[in-house]
Image (tube, rainbow, N blue to C red; front, side, top):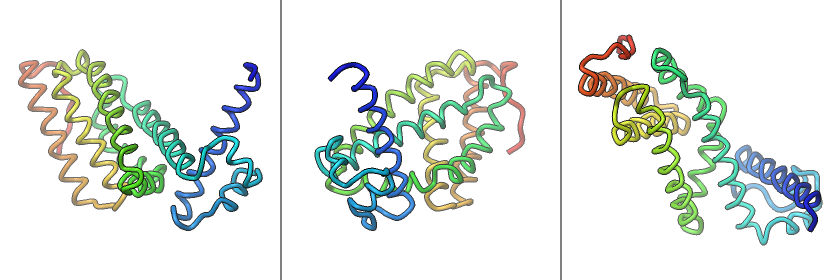
Length: 202
């Protein structure tokens, strides 16, 4: 397959993954058949099998691809400086719920299913690495060791995802309050109350 054909093939495959995942997110994993997926992609049912071995392969690959894009978008919204940190922490759970709530609900439906659980484990191990790398980038800005920051990132991500799943304000506020206080305490510990400590009131 020549380079041009490879690019066309990959672009079409990406189009299918995005549209199938969206279709599942809107209607439910068990509510859409091959015909409905093909219609959502604007292709014939048989053409789906030009890109995926079977329905399970389509579900696995589309989930990994689409949720990795959600993760990238989430991290891209992270503040570039410490002074913007509290705004980000306050706003990101609501942004996540509004924009990606259905996708998170679908992801957990898929990755907790016995058939797909091993793929979920693989995906989240990748997330472990990516969050650790991001924590290393933040270390110099906050003056807090990245090992501690990784845990704080997980606290924010889990609070945001939980809110996206259940819109549980009590859980969200409890987690965010502890997260902010933890940042303050760690900033004081490692920077002796350094000038970079963000101002806020919990």
